[in-house]
Amino acid sequence: MQIGPYQLNNQLIVAPMAGVTDQAFRNLCLRYGAALAVSEMLSSNPDVWDTDKSRQRMTHSGEEGLRSVQIAGADPELMAQAARFNVEQGAHIIDINMGCPAKKVNKKLAGSALMQNPDLVKSILQAVVNAVEVPVTLKIRTGWDPEHKNGVQIARIAQDCGIVALAVHGRTRQCMYKGDAEYDTIKAIKQNISIPVIANGDIGSPEKARFVLDYTGADALMIGRGAQGRPWIFREIQHYLDTGNKLAPIDVAQQRQVMLEHLSKLYDLYGEYMGSRFARKHMGWYLNQEDQRQFRADFNRLETAAEQYSLVECYFDELVQN
Image (cartoon, rainbow, N blue to C red; front, side):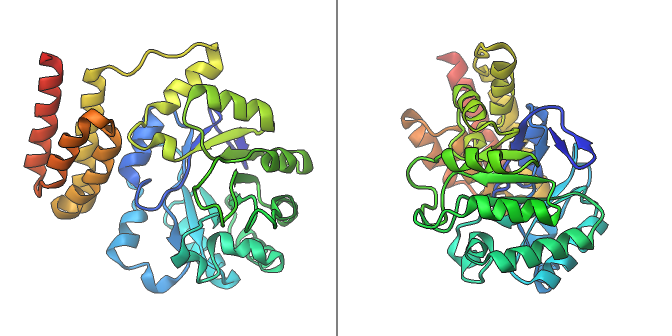
């Protein structure tokens, strides 16, 4: 998988997810086999760049691997400005968001709302590509709604504008995350352009990863929700793609180590107050089985790092004893 001058060591990429793919999560996924992790979406509005949220999202100090930064907006000049700013901050790749279905993004005519306006898409892509010397990638959906799937049209525009790789989520904006992702549109896009195509949507197992690659002909896979609470999924998928065999499940000791390290990195990144709140979300994903409901309820009531650490330690001590 090639993105501009950069050769990735496999076909597995972490999808950008707001409030999820911060530096702590990206580094875990990279360590467990992802070739690239795209950062959380950053607004192209310079008025918000100095907020705590934006500064945390821009943090790349000590980050492993290539730095791919996703930007979002609907004004070509502001998008170009945001691209230049993030390259100055150390981005190796700029990714443009035209796939986010969130209402607060779409009401500003950004994210997947842009797919309704191919002319504006073209203007934004040209502005960003011309603004920076690093590779520019794009993430889209299959269209605005099931009756208006224009993914192939947008893909051709992207290629003509100099986009070097295209990620496609197999749903329309109207579908949000409901129902099953469809891969026919991704397959059609791959057949109509020559730049690398990255398939995204509902890839939550090694077997599904193999199927999507084979069915669509995509060059790579982008995994989002399938990695929540399971950053080691990239290692599992790569092993299956390489051997055709499933890797043994992660053992209790490894899971304990990952969860405690994740907690530590969240506190380092956000501080104790906000870190403990982000931790509730991530720990809930790690332990989301029916028999772990009480643990999640207890964990969500805790306010300090020490209390959260202690509960996770106790949980695994009891798991080993039983």
